[in-house]
Amino acid sequence: MSLLDIKDLSHSFGDKQLFKETKFQLNKGEHIGIVGPNGAGKSTFIKICTGQITPDSGQIFRHPAASFGCLDQYAQMKENITISDFLKSAFQSLFIKEEQMNLLYSKAAAGDEKALPAAARLQEQLELHDFYQIDTRIEQAAAGLGLLTIGLECPVEKISGGQRARVILAKLLLEQPSVLLLDEPTNFLDKEHVSWLADYLSGLPSAFLVVSHDNEFLEQSVNRVCDIHNGRLTKYYGTYSDFLKKKTFLQEEYIRRYSFQQKKIKETEEFIRKNMAGRKSKMARGRKKQLNRMERMENPDVTENRPCFNFSQLPVTNADHLSVRHLSVGYQYPLLSGLQFSAKGGQKIVITGFNGIGKSTLLKTLTNQIPALDGSFSFSEQVTIGYFEQDLIWDDITKTPLQIVSDCYPSLPIKKVRQHLAQCGISSRHAGQEIGSLSGGEQCKVKLCLLTLKPCNFLIMDEPTNHLDAAAKEALKNALKNFTGTVLVVSHEENFYRGWVDRMIQIQK
Ligand code: ATP
Image (tube, rainbow, N blue to C red; front, side, top):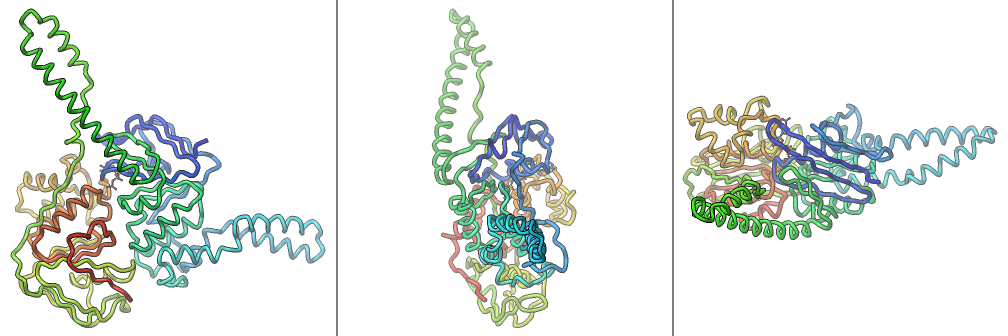
């Protein structure tokens, strides 16, 4: 029996149909990567699986004996609790059993004969659930997700948003539900921790669904891929690269069939046009009927909305654009100290290093959002900065992308605003939709649209590829390659920065 069985699923937002009478099954041991372009409906699907969204129609069967655990990066955490205690709460039911067992052993010691076998039964249950390895398991998950560097005795209210998300993920993994549902879990992880998570997941006996745009992570972690495309969920067996091969083959085959159909349509139309009035008119009418009845294949070229980012460039010289001298960055105390580097005009630099080490804090300092704790930095006079912040935070989530871009660039005619948004992969329907209801990737494209409109010659970007699908990542890569100004980008995606950056700054403690 399936752990999750979905039948006849249909769901729309307004006139956009995300799912159309589609089906899906998750069976024991299946490790499924959910993929598809931005806005295809991946997060919506996860929310349908968890019951957060009730679909327009369809039957959803969740196995009654299965426990479902979903990653909620914004989950509430009790205050005044340490990371260690928060992680231990994953085993709450076992700790309760331990207390009961201890009580029974005390009773047995006091002469209660019935208490001893009951205590032994509880002990067996605890051993079955690896209760006596809890500390080791916590250590392993904490080390894997980079929590040991924060310190497990650190109170949860003192940690950053990214660290919080990792603590919540660690607890979810420790709970070991029979079905794990993860929506883009790698967005808050650096390369090493992504690799640990992929390894951990691939070795899980339980089943999981994971939404991700990170190809390397998917290759390492899943044994099935479920592709969301044009309202359908298609399950492919095998690794992510098996899926890519199969999908390319099917796409090529589709294009061949489409071209054949187009040729047939053209020939038939030609035949009808020539013979409607002559002695073959009966035949021509028959062909016309056939043509009207024909189920037309969708043009493969127009099914995907490929973005193209074009940064507005200001002139650049080869002189030093930025020099950083003995800089310390942080909040109450320094996260990074003694930073020393410079960037010449036109240089492309990637900053890498562990999550939580202070890369975003460095960018926030360089863009004057927080003061430097010590040392200094200076940009040359000719520099104009364009900054891309990691978080998808909006002043007013009820505004539409059209309003947001128009408010930021009031002199731009609305027609141009639409064009720019469309170029960045935001369709006219999404341009008029509340920003808060757009998918992560769509919101990210709106932010990139705002940035491309700002004339600048120095781009500072904090993990710009989080949330972006493969086509958008490729488009951003090309745009940055062609940008003649300086680029300082924080990224953990080697696939994204390889080939166009000319320097790497690896930040270490
Ligand atoms: P991404 O890769 O960008 O994270 P996704 O595949 O996870 O995308 P979803 O977040 O599921 O996409 O959104 C699917 C589509 O449904 C998007 O086009 C989005 O704009 C739309 N959508 C989602 N929620 C709402 C809502 N509450 N109201 C209207 N439209 C919505």
